Structures are given as structure tokens and as C-alpha cells.
Image (cartoon, rainbow, N blue to C red):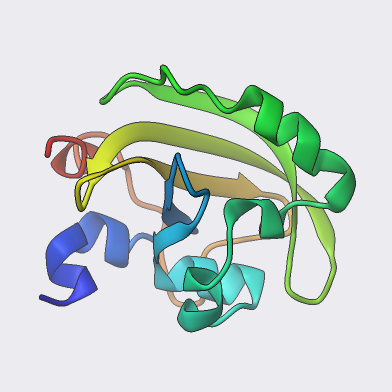
Length: 138
């Protein structure tokens, strides 16, 4: 089954950078096209990385301390962080995340919005309410 079929259109075709990461291993489990374009990594590069790899080294410990292992399925959080693109550019983002089970793993779905990461080329802003709920149950 292809990623787009597993994740559905709201994730794969979202104009915003989105990914799913494993709460235990910190590995990226899935990324959308907007994330690859905004951050400069290919899908294969993302899937070989951990979420710490898109953070400046000086922010990584704080991130590890703030991971909430009790983040309940279906609940969301919104936080401000700094991320790093492949070219080393550091930028501020607001990250909204939803806890979910993905392929049998406790995970988080992340949507990143920031000043230096825009919409993927050719994409329009679309409302997300209602579409995310398709990914939460497992």
C-alpha cells in the first residue's frame, strides 16, 4: 500500500509541512511533499533521520525533556520551536502535533508553520479542521 493511501489525502497533499514520528525511537515514519520542499531533505533522507536532526544542537536536550510520553491519543498541542533546514538555516516554527497510533507505533502527527517555511509551491491554504481526524483513530 502506498503512503498516500495509508495516510490519506489530507496528509499527503497538505500545503503545510507535516510528518509522523515515533515517540519511542524519535524516527520519522512518514513525511509529506511540503516537508521535503520546505526543509530541503528528500523523503529518503527524512526517513533515515530522527526528529532531533531538524533541530539546532543546542535545542535538542530541551526537546527531549519536553517529550510527553502521556500525550493521549487524539489530543493536540501547539508549541514554538526552532528548526534547521538541510542547508543549515535555522528558523522559528509553530508546531501543532496530535498523538496517534501509526502502523502499531505510538507516534505524533506534526504540522509545522513558520516564517521561513511557506506553503509548498502551487499549493493553497486550506482549512484543516475535520481532515486531521481521519488520521487519529487506529
